[in-house]
Image (cartoon, rainbow, N blue to C red; front, side, top):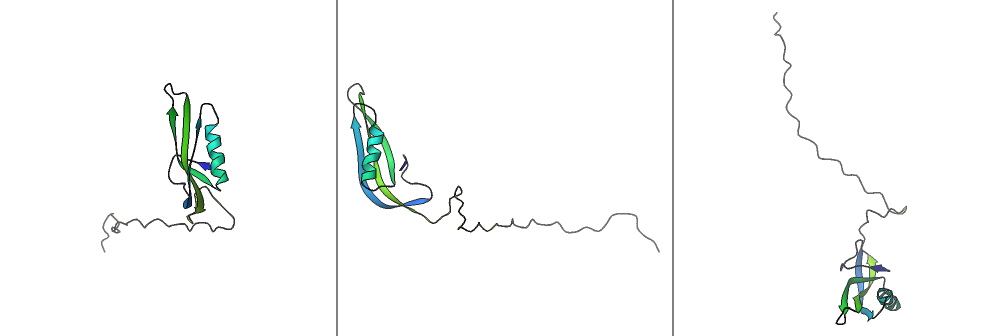
Length: 111
């Protein structure tokens, strides 16, 4: 499960938005409980994750985000190398401009 504060996941596109998931209470484990809720919805990721403190003395926290299904976006990720994928075609550098040739400098030949 990918969990991120961003709205996008590099190398993927959001195929389906499953809904908002949130979990909060007084105690630990809120983030894990939110991820479990997303998994029950069939999510691959939770995007846009945030946290809000609750109570007068900040005695608890609420975690929230959007459960989504992801699809590969078709653009190869620089960290992914797969044997079935072709290696990227190398791009040759642009040719550099060449200064015009100058005649050799030296003593003149007299005939």
